[in-house]
Image (cartoon, rainbow, N blue to C red; front, top):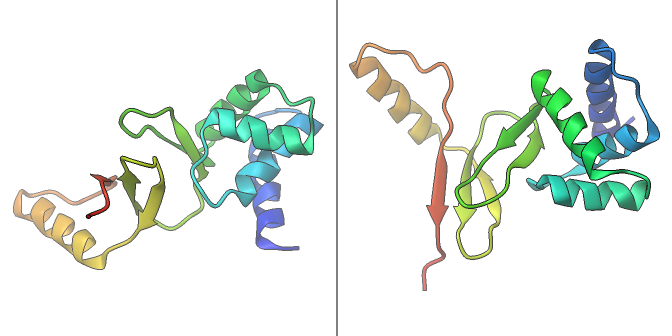
Length: 141
């Protein structure tokens, strides 16, 4: 069993834990989510899922995403000026660069930024519990 298959199993388990019946359509969406290397929006997830099972409806995509969000299995990102995008929640912490010209979302992680945020929070008497960083950028030149 590969990593994507394991992820599909985890996503299915999260839905079953909520008493949600697994259907071919939902299985197709879970397969798309598990294999996504980008941050697709609901329409793109729908398009990809229909390649696996043409009977997948956009309503099924939205309902399933909502259930997966409730289970904290999928993260919903709303980047400025764009529809919500989704990724599975099992990835290690990372931040995002959003290319304003192409809409591409680039993941990055910086130990320096993490340390600086912790230092700033501590200076104010706080401890970082959770944070999200989004950098909106354009390529130079």
